[in-house]
Amino acid sequence: MVKMVDNNGYYSDFEAKKWICEIGRRVYNKNFVAANDGNITVKCGPNTIWATPTGVSKGFMTPDMMVKMDLQGNVISGKHKPSSEVKMHLRVYNENPEVKAVVHAHPPVATSYAIAGISLEKPVTAEAVVLLGTVPIAPYATPGTQEVPDSIAPFCKNYNAVLLANHGALTWGRDIIEAYFRMESLEHYALMLMYSNNIINKVNELNCNQIDTLMGLREKLGIKTGGVPPCKDETTNPLKGKNELQAKEELIETIVRKVTEKVLENMKR
Ligand SMILES: [Zn+2]
Image (cartoon, rainbow, N blue to C red; front, top):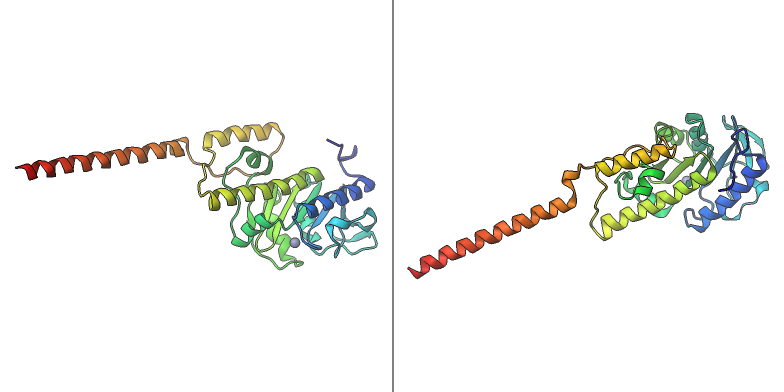
């Protein structure tokens, strides 16, 4: 993997602007945004970020369009205005100093869950549990207002992503690739949940033992955030459920057979 940050742990201006354009193209090509939706920021110093400008498609950006800001929201350089949604990025950086990049998009399946008001926490694959974690949902807030950063603030320290009710999704990471990959993982996870819950109509969730193992693995990878998904004890695994159902059916069959035998016996008398 390419070295993301310089020796001080922050992006150089050149790298920051280049990477924002690259990730913008990917977000756009992946259909995570339509038209001018979405925004991307990276941290280039303890109190400074580079941000995408307002009113520009993320698929068609060049480095000269970027805006440099401080974490209080003041523009330091750049000829464009920053997006009004940059307020929630600033809030993530202010709440969690470990974050070096933030991505906001409207990926259609994850956003549909956000519209339904459903947070994503079912443990269904190891990758989603370890690399993304559970995804809470922030209450609806009017875009561009102070309510938006306030709505996400409680989740910035302990999670890696949040759904924005009736709006979209926000992910962050220790570099821009991690933040972007979390957006990819989020949409992929939402898509699998939709298929398994609503199309295949059967979900075998990971049990608590399996979750414990994955939590250990996550710790080894140095990821301390993502929450712990709710899990069911092994004893409630679907195979046991199946055996119980089979046993019940067999019992009913036996009873029916015995009753029938009795009825036939009575008729013979
Ligand atoms: Zn948005």
